[in-house]
Amino acid sequence: MKRTLTHLMMAIAVMMCGACTSEDKNEPETPEIETPEIPDPPASPDTPNGKKMLVVYFSWGGTTQRMAQQIANLTGADLFRIEPVVPYPTEYTPCTEVALEERDTDARPAIVATVENWADYDMVFIGCPVWWHTAPMIINTFSESYDFKDKTVVPFCTYAATYRDETLARIVELTPDAAHLTGEGLTSGRINEQTIATWLRNIGIVE
Ligand SMILES: Cc1cc2nc3c(=O)[nH]c(=O)nc-3n(C[C@H](O)[C@H](O)[C@H](O)COP(=O)(O)O)c2cc1C
Image 1 (cartoon, helix red, strand yellow):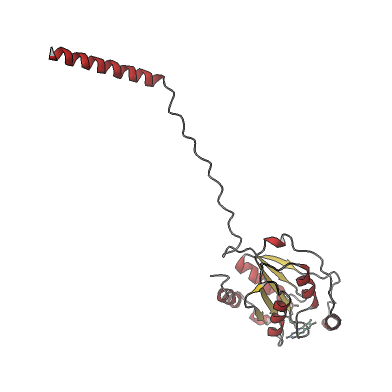
Image 2 (image 1 turned 180 degrees about the horizontal axis):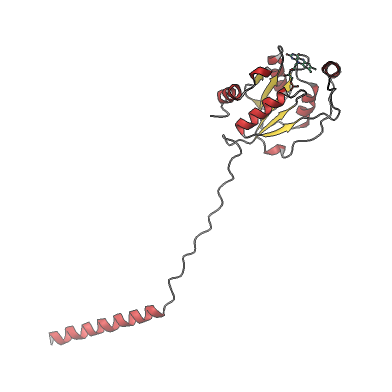
């Protein structure tokens, strides 16, 4: 009796298992698991420290432009050259005369182009040559044309011998709404990657 019962239970189990298997065979393949869409990673920062930077400069003879380019190379910043609508004389002495006249009349020489996407920049380097003991008046035109709230300004200049510090201070004075980092002023012969990298490291812009 006991054995009959055991056989019966085994038979039922086999039947059930058979039913299972055949049912499974009819079932559709395991549905593919939908992989959730992975969002794109955030856009990589434009600069090593994640700040979007712009190097704005005015240069008459090309020296300040060299310094500006080195800063841009080391930081990944964009470059914007301030170009006067009325070009300065290409001869040195006539240029100094126009520059002095502009300074003494508190002129605002017009600038050819405007910075695109100004609002996107966190940090703005502003550089120029020393002209008559201070920044050329076109720097006033520039600084009065943009909103510096929430920006950090880093001044830089090039010079022959004198008024380096006054010119850096003038750029700070012209951008009162910005925060400021310590600037750098170099004579032509000191413009090189090492000098500029040391300065940028000291003020925490590059590692
Ligand atoms: C109009 C004018 C005024 C200048 N005034 C000064 C000055 O007061 N102090 C100084 O050390 N260099 C002065 N310089 C020399 C320039 O600052 C220096 O050569 C600078 O590096 C030139 O930069 P750039 O080639 O970008 O124009 C003057 C140059 C010019 C053309």
